[in-house]
Amino acid sequence: MVLIWGLNFPIAKAALSELDPLAFNALRFPLAALVVLIAMRNRGGFLWPARGDRLRTFVLGVLGNVFYQQFFIFGLALTRAGTASLLLAATPIITALLSAAVGHERVGRRTWTGVIATFIGISLVVAFGGAASAEGASLLGDLLMIGASISWAVYTVGSRDLIERYGSVQFTAWTLWTGAILLSLIGLPSVLRTDLAAISAGAWFGVVYAGALSIGIAYLIWYYGVRQIGNTRTAVYANLIPVVALTAAWLQLGEVPTGGQLLGAGVILGGLTLAQVRVNRPPRG
View (cartoon, rainbow, N blue to C red):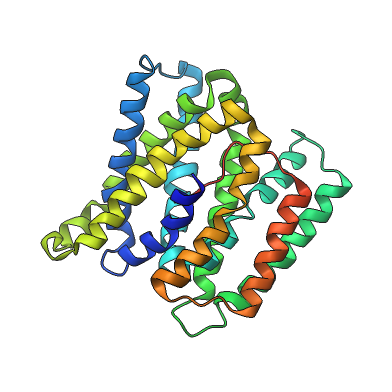
């Protein structure tokens, strides 16, 4: 799971050099939806949410997939792959703050220390690790990635009781299918304008990887890990994703980490480890 999500950042970033972000999402999300559909059928089929929960499930699907994925893919197109992975690593911290705000859980002193450290790390990454470089990184891209973190945190907190009622895999399938339909419709004009025959094999590999593996299969691996070793231990492994992403972006895209980026990465990962935040799963595009 760590390898799939960590490698996804540079692989998707490379594909975006040939594909418009809207077209990229429209092509990869049906693959993810198909993988999850096959998995659900193999698990014995699936149910639909109760009538009173359908509208809310739809709205959360729009927030957690359409909004999140638009922020993510446009942000990734505008900033460095390694920077994007570091900014998304802050999602559990934002989730914890929102959970505390609505009364779902209490934030202790240790968590607050981790929160402060994480946001200091984010500031270092934005100031020195991406937007300040001349390698195609953009402050707008960084802000969009932060927007992705916020949208996913709101989705996570808002879906808590529905996940408890229906199960995480079933609920994720519903919201993922909602996102797949809407993202396909939004991106269809862009797909029609694209000369698909001119797209390289490497870019098509990025589409398949980012759809079938990074969303479809990796989500299933995550939930299997949660069932086998628990939420907290599984989440600890997710802290390694930026390390893999930074290394892969360096080797594949030539994104040499700056001193500020490395310092910010260390502070972010230290803050996450200190806080030991519990989340359903980290978002990865």
